[in-house]
Length: 273
Image (tube, rainbow, N blue to C red):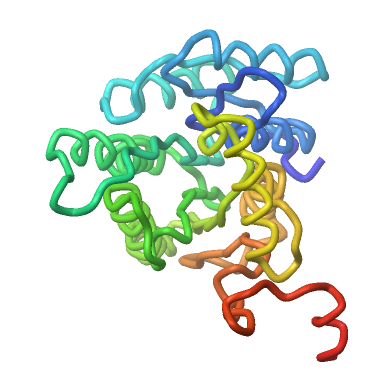
């Protein structure tokens, strides 16, 4: 019960079906460690799924419905946390949209603005209205992406996650003396609803295979892997860590290209040790 008597807001915490996204998985892990939750999502039905799951397992959770890019949502979320639980200690900024895969010359300005509004402005607004009330020992966890520093087909998404990384460092410096830690979890390609949505079974199997073979562990990443990192930053286990980014990607960002463009096999890797 590392988070007993702690209150957490998790944005993008809703869910549907059996495949978990980062926010939904984070809600489960934080609740299991004793946190009381405010689950923020633009879909009331999706948020209710997570809340019902948490409550059925003995946790405390409530829904706030809204778009994080709207300041009213962040105000209502923080007010709800105080109204129900009397405080706020943890903010997890996991709400995000991925945007279209287009080249720079085909990027639509309105589409760019929408991605930046949800992913970057949304995190800023949530932090703005949360940090004012957070006591010493509180923690803000932003969710970035390795897309921010690698080539990507989704420029707006990559740019928004780059903004998240910068925001993390700046806020850590601004609120360090107040005892508020600000860190960023940086996932690689996960098998999660954001990726799985709208693609065929054949495409998804090929994508999942490529993703496994691209990382050093040859293991598929899931929302639960990222949620474990969120839990670490939310707890006192990370009490002397702030302004940092933790990459959770199976080692794909440090993997060297395989010989002749092929993939390393377990056998060939073993031979190099």
